[in-house]
Length: 164
Image 1 (cartoon, rainbow, N blue to C red):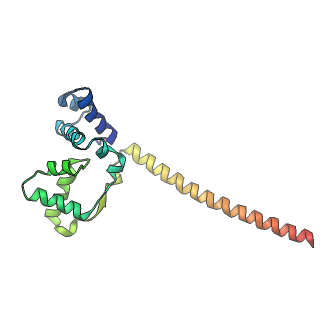
Image 2 (image 1 turned 60 degrees about the vertical axis):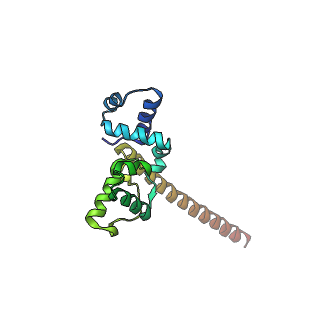
């Protein structure tokens, strides 16, 4: 089950402020202890920033990715440690980058944003509905401007014909 950024932040805050154990949090939110530990450590290192919606769709440059991959492949740090240092919202992202690099080489690593398909179904539906409404609004505003212009031209034409 995909967990929202708000839920992840809630878990981390509950650990620090309510002193709830990691095991209890994992049971309460029906998730793995490792994920809870990751969220807690991420909050400890970077505060609330990695849990913002902006961070979810942040642009990761090719250079950032290659640097992070190099750190993991050097063997000095684990993928999880590097993910924490780079404030990745999901520890598996780093593993995906390394896997892609190993399977397809350096050319497979490109700039990328967080992917919208990772949104919860309800969030994706809201996003699509808002996008559709914005497009409809733009269309209606353009149509309204066209009709106003047409009306003003018609008024001018009527005034000119009355003067004659």
